Length: 432
Image (cartoon, rainbow, N blue to C red):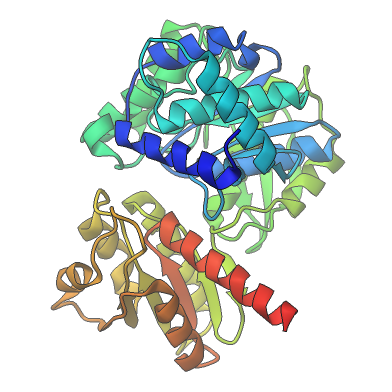
């Protein structure tokens, strides 16, 4: 059997097959594995932004209620094993190696599995091996032809719609919504997050076609903030007062509302939860790289926003932070991938920024730092070019005033690279 590093090398080599939208290969391999995804109930989550945070909240609440929960998300920030978790534990290196070998051995001639297809099959099989009570499955890309779209879930959540991955999903919000609506199943409850009326109508039409009950944010359920960290949830049947989540940002309250509506509509009979479990789960949820504070004085936070919708949520949070501290300076370290809408992301975020440091994550798809700099030229912002992300982080950490606010953003790959360096630095300090 291959070692863990050799197994990862094989898995990442599958990226050469690119993104393959279609269900033939995943259907074939799951048949050969005797359909592991049918051995436990599932919740299926799609949307442009907020999928991972919503999934983490669902997992935390269900775990607080005593259920053994599988969680499948992407991408990972530091280690591949983060993608597949059971009860807050990453899949082990040994399980990654064993499952990869097993799936390769039983794979048929339908065609070469892509990275995401093999990883999805691995997650489904691991959850069966671990005897989970429920699995929360995040869509990888789109919905209709995504490898996860082989489920018969208890419920479906579509968090929101924005422009991203247009080369695969379409260039309009309606076209993207059509792709994501492809996960709707006959008579399966669907929760739809906050979105424009003409976009939500796409999901309403699909739900009617499949006789699926549909619940819309701000119509069938809603949240109202009562402080920066607390909110009230007015649900499908009941109202919950003074809920709190330790994930920062008003958008995370909306994600929590979506998650609560999904639990109400889809799992209240099969997987009942007490109000204490809901409170405890929301208060203890963790989701790295989303407005994650790494230090204070100056405050440095990491946020994986990488498209205009995520940029707007980040803008709203940062604007509130600056409003509460007059004279505070905002410093942004920015790195992005080539397939993202750089101009629109900058248009949303730059009005708040005092100082911008452009950098380049160590990824082939990353925009070179000097290209980022050219895109910013002529705008009213102090600009620095530091190609190394860790050098950029250390420079700001050591030179910013204690009252400043620093945000590392533009890419989950950039955030993951910084998290990895922080872990290495902490490990070195402990050993010393």
